[in-house]
Image (cartoon, rainbow, N blue to C red):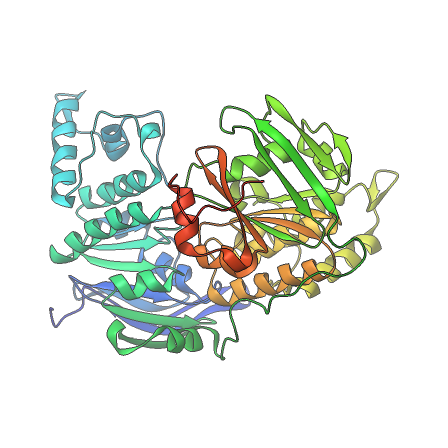
Length: 507
C-alpha cells in the first residue's frame, strides 16, 4: 500500500449557524484501500464526505489532494481533482438509456454532432473495466437497483475518479446484489481506486473494508485496521456506551381485548398479489418477510388504500370497510410508515413541526386556524417520547439525520392515535443506536395494545421483533410461522418457494 495518502483531511470543522457538527477531524485515505466510515446518524459522516466532495465548504480546515492543500472547492472542481460521491438517491433518468445516463451533460461531439457510437464504445469499456456486463443501449428503468448503483459508479469512473465515496450503497439491495457490488468494489480496489464506504451494516464493513474510522457527535474517535477491532468495540466507540441487548426482552400483551382480531383480510388480489388472507391480533407484532419483489410492501399498501385492489375484503375490528384512499384508512385507525421516508413519509421542505402535525392538523385547528397551544403540546409530547434531536422545530426536516427523520415519521402517525400500524423497513439506513430506540418503542406500543405489521429485509429484525411471521413468495403467502418455530433457514426456504419441513401453516 502506498506510503502517501491520496486525500488528507486536517482540522475539519463545520458550523451550521451556531450548531457545530464537525470538530477538528483528521483522517487520511490511501489509494487501493476501502475505508469504512462509521457512526450514528448525526455523527458527522455525511458532513465530512460533503466537504471532501465539494458539496459544502468547511468552516475551518484543509483537504489535501495529491499533496496540494485546499480550503474548499466546488463539486465540479472536486471531480476534476478525482473525487466523486455516489449518494443513496440516484441521479439518473429512468427513460434514458444507460449510455445516455453516463454521458448526460458531457456528451461526446464530433463536428458539432453527438457521437453516440463513441459514447456506447466508451460505456462498454468502463463496464469491462469494472468487470460487469451491462448493455449500454438498455433503458435505465429496466435495470435493478443494484445495476443502477453500478451505473452511478461508472459515471464517476468515466470522470477519472481516484477517490469514490459510497453512501449506504447496499441499503436497498438483496444479498445476491450485494455480492455483485462487492466484486466490483474489490476490483476497483485492486486497480488502485480509493473507496470511502459509509454503511450501518457492520457485517459488510468487516467483510469489505481495510480500515475503519469512527465518528461520534462530530468528533473523530479512532481510525484503525478493520482486523484490529470487532463489532462490540465498534458499537462502544460509535455510541459512547455499552449497548444492552439489541432487541427488547419479549413481552406479551395481556390487557383488555388481548387475542382479539383487529384486522382481517380475505383474498386480496391485484396485479402483484394473489389471494392474500391473514389476521392481526390486538397487541401483536406480525412480520412480513420475503425476497425483494415478493409482495410484502404491496400487501400493506393495498390495505392502506395506496394501491388499487381488484378483489378482496378488509375487516377492521369485525366491521367490513372499503378503503380506496389513504384518507379512509387514517379515519379507520390505520397508519403506514413507508419504506421510502424521504419520498413518501416526509415533506422535506417543510418544518419538523409541520411534518409531525400534518396528519392531525384539523384536530389542532379552530375556525381554520391552528391553535398554538394544542400544537405545542403535541410537539412536546412527540419530541420527548421519541427523543428527536434538532435545533428548532421550525427547521426544515431535510436537515435532520436519517434516524431523526424516521422518528419524525413515527411521531406524525403516533399523533393520529392509530391502533393498527404498518412499518415498512422501519430501520433502513439508520444507525445501531437509533435502531435500538425504535425497537424499544415498538415494544412499548405493543404493551399499550397497539397492533403492528413489520416488513423488513433484515432477518435478525424480523426474528427479534415479531410474534408471528408471514412469508411471501411471488405475491402469495408461502407460510405462517410462530416466533418460537421461526428460523432463518425456514424463512429463506419459504421465501424461495421451496417446500419441505420448513413450511408451516398458511392459515
